[in-house]
Length: 109
Image (cartoon, rainbow, N blue to C red; front, top):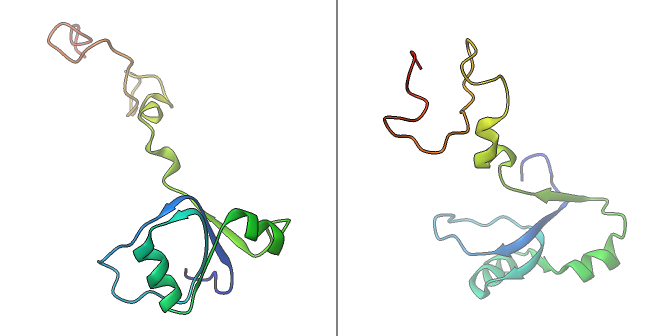
């Protein structure tokens, strides 16, 4: 993790192995679960695999941890937020029943 040296990476989920990553750096990772291959690669690189109860004992306030999460704006509902559909320079998608010939297509739309 660039700029996060010495911090514990926290993942609310399962850490799985990725064969595309050739060199695993020395990491301290906290997660709900680890696959056997992922745990073996992290420990072999000199890292540490923690569970949330061990993390709570080590750092009760969460200091020195980094929460890793996925893209926040990737929900389908995010497409409909913003300027109203049909307004100039709007990229917002309208709420329509279907995307066929008869739905939201008439009158220059």
